[in-house]
Image 1 (tube, rainbow, N blue to C red):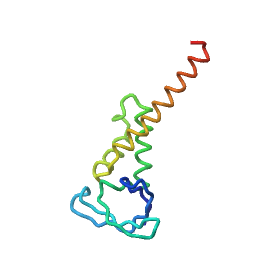
Image 2: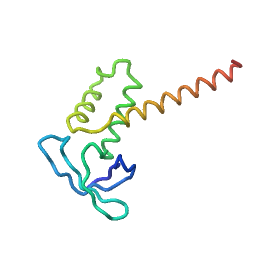
Image 3: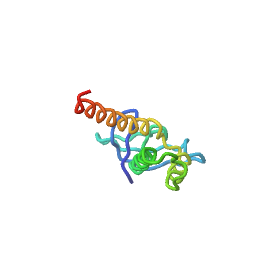
Image 4: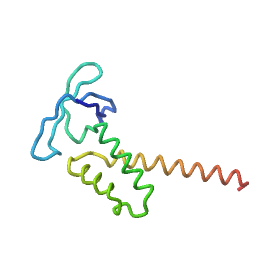
Length: 116
């Protein structure tokens, strides 16, 4: 089916089946681990690769626009992430923190270069 990150184990796994529920947050995923075992995992513990790409795009939009909600793509991404119950908060914070640290490092380099 597709690959995903099993968040609590920080492991890349193969999703073999989604067991649907009326609410996405109640959906469970049958995964196949690298060692060949299969597990049943809650929605909140799985991040699909295509969702990872959406989160990275969202982070890019948040960095680029002063008012992200005005971006049509922002609305589409947020709707998809919220509608399907994607656990995106931690990953988004991580991406934004990396960017902030990179900017801070550039500022320190600039200050040192200018003799400050």
